Image: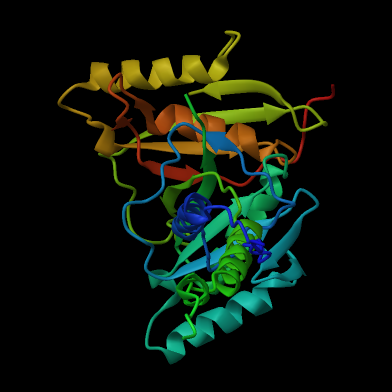
Length: 145
Length: 167
């Protein structure tokens, strides 16, 4: 009597296309991932402008100040009021001087909310000027035409 | 004579793909979770030392243009003034841009845009986005081929006016 071979064979699907696709997805996300130094605060909605193009070269010594619509200033994740921010900026200046640089060499990037009061933005600029900063960059998001 | 089953030996030598696929999926999940869509941002660069008042005589070669932005108490824009006359059109920033273009063109070789400075005076409560709109109107435009044509690059601010129009 002929005995049938009972051994079962495992039928595996061809995984190659799926792995190819997965690697392509990984490559896509790896290329587009963006580890920025200053994490933009989600509370701040920048005003938009067609002229706001990303700069060709990175700013030399950037110091980013974020101003919420409530008038709070965010520096490196810490919240300050405009009246208190002078002490923080002074310590930034002292740190620059320790590195044999001056406050005039640094650029203060101001990321203010689009509905923040202009007077508060100007007040923040004045505080920076009193500490010794001279160069400012008013940040806006690029408006698509 | 015992005959070995050659087919079974061949199956055992197959590569174990499961750990690799596990890791690959974990990497995929990591990058997907870290991914955030950011909009492109750009800057308007302004150089403003503390005070230019006591730093020597005023440079007469600079043509100063006054732009005044007034606001309602809500912070919305109530008026745009260019050299003390109110811009009455529906889109005052377009009109402001046209005025600056006209001035830059009429001055010709005598006053290039490098010799112009726009001084902004804004109400305290004015929403910041209107200031950016005004700066956009005076600092440049997008040409037909998509490039930026720069107009006035020198910008300064005077102290904000506290009063706002009611409305």
